Image 1 (cartoon, rainbow, N blue to C red):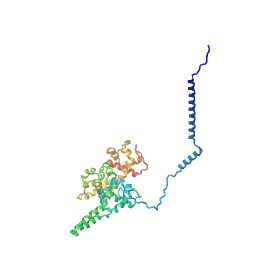
Image 2: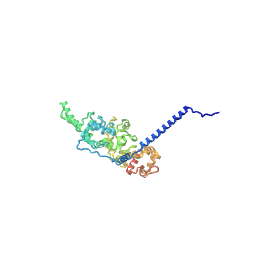
Image 3: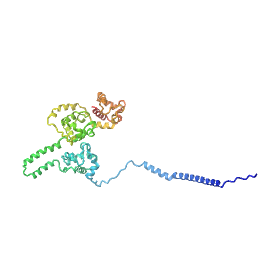
Image 4: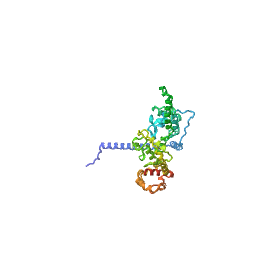
Length: 391
């Protein structure tokens, strides 16, 4: 029986050939791609030198730069509206720290009594809570004047008139309208109006006292203190009368230290500050006619002499920057601000013992609250503030 070789199917041969072609193309593509990758990522010597040169220039680049200004060019004076928007609006748009707001006639009227020149001088030099030139030394005197005129333009107040001009000009006007009025009547009217102007200008400034002694607590209502111009806060206190409020402020009450922590403030300045803080509330606080405050003066003086000097403003600032992290939350067993029960046994040890613990550290509390840059007087002020809040 003869055996003949088996014949391969033609289709199988075609498939083998096709597969070999595909494999060859794939290998070619991979090799080509690898070559392109190597070529694109390689850096020639010239490019490498340029890169290093740029890197060195970046390292040696100066930290700052100086811009030359041609001082022969006169600066362009800004309008009052521009100065207000750039410098004044931060406080005068919201009445922050008791500043008179834009167009508020009630707030600007007592200030207008001093005259525009006096207002410009106060703005230039700073007054109360307001820094010199609103905190921007670049503002010129003329720009300050323009800004004040802009803020008062809708109040109807004649800011260009000198102080006292209103009453002085009123007499001739009255004489013109009523020729029958005698000269003696006009003189009496002028005499009656004059003391009011003098009292408004010469008396102690409640705003100034508020800015240097009361602003730290009465702006935010800290520790329950009544906020500036807040009728709801002041109404229950106004019920006892102005003299009682003045006495409480002189001797201290609750968390408030005697004379707001500043023994240099006089009784009249305290009275002026209270009247300023209730200004615009309509509560009608008026000084009593009886001479009781004068009779109580010796007792008040002895109380002030016995009271320790407490710099509440400095204490609040130090507390807010260093102490609040623990004493607001009671972390690690620290007594919380205003917690009388927690502070009572510590206060019983004496003020000097609390000073020593705060300066040298005690248990979980590090020396100087963890801030070695603080001086001892600053730490003592913070301790005084926390003690006053717990009494």
